[in-house]
Image (cartoon, rainbow over all chains, first blue to last red; front, side, top):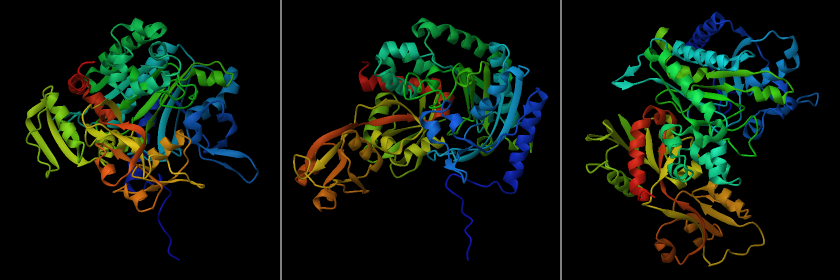
Length: 334
Length: 212
């Protein structure tokens, strides 16, 4: 009988040199995380489905691979590290010494439409910081995010064929546009307007009085954002500090509220779905030229712990190892 | 360098006209060449390269970042649902997606209606929203032949002038959606070329909307 070497859609094997390259990248990034005081956690690939009902809704819940095992239990394959870690830690918060710095690496699987560079099984490396002063934790984790990206890029040139190849990190705050969108659209059309602004629709943004949000990322007059204007002001100050710190590293940092607007105000989208995911404070994403997807995303997700009846501030991120390798950015040092 | 993808076919004319009105003159564009540079043209000082590709393939090239931005029909975007920014729809070259039949009214059938279309996903979505649950048959060309040759009861297709419908004695039963050439941008390119693209988009918006 002839045996096929085919694999299911959206799944690939790393063989020979690609396996070596991935392990080398993991080793370098893990070493940096250990150096910064982060401890590795190893999480299972199988879990119960039930705990994720309050954590993930909408699209993210639908993307989970779930099945009934021989004991009749509804199980899921690991689709995300952060909520799994949160649900394991939430019942033990009283016993934990905070702040807690953890990192993980491994594969996640999601049943999602195939897009350029997006598989159904892919490897992630991520870090979480629980507890501590929120503003300090945000800045610390963003700094770590940048340092890991730069470590992955290694000595790859920032200019290729005369074109600037800077890493670009976009910052946002969950809910920053909510009040403005509500005021502009009215209760029934706010989610549609949010989606249009997330897609950088200039006509819709102009009609909503948010033209500057799609053109430059945030309005000159932050008071149009209502109560969240102050959070955006602090975000701009954070951007300036980080831009100054990474001036020589070919990292461009911008505040772009539209980047994370799509999940705002849609009652069907809960704590764990949509482009905003489960983040409820600072959010960030990294891009490189020619990429179809963000190299990494992260943010503050205190709400996840609250929905697990826990009270703990939390900020974290994950990096797509396959994407970093595909870019060739990790090859420079190998 | 900013690489712009332009569609072969019906949207090329409106796309070129809009870019020309916005100050990007592509007069020497040779439709037989895949890749062309325009040294005398720029977007805020950045040289421009144009790739001529099929409308249906363009979203993929934008998602991959092979081209930074492109002009693509919104019909293709609705069917393929690419993960790209869609900052602007052009005014020129607009058309509509319509439900087409041999009679002015929707044919009455005891069973499920059959519809021929080149947009199986989008058409099914639009028809379901109207409580019309039809069997969708995917055709790639000459969609009007579906009802004419009794392959299907109706067709769902683009109508521009209505000339094809009149020629075949078909009726436009209902307009399902508006269709327009749409300017789309790759996510990473949007951030990399934000200032330049914003300048081009501003000029396009000004000419396409009359500064409304």
